[in-house]
Image (cartoon, rainbow, N blue to C red):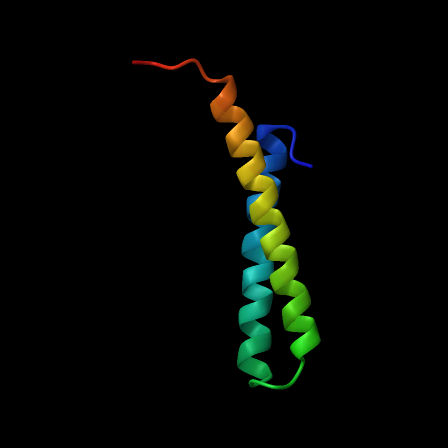
Length: 67
């Protein structure tokens, strides 16, 4: 669970790292091979995006409306 701006930055870095890893896998193993590995990486990326969205939502709810 992302609870601070530092956690948020770490999650973004982890997403970048996972996306790079996925790209390398896609280049080295064409469609149909290493499918489970690619699917697992995609799931990790999706989970991190969900956590970032939850954190963003909680930060927005803490911010006073500046109208």
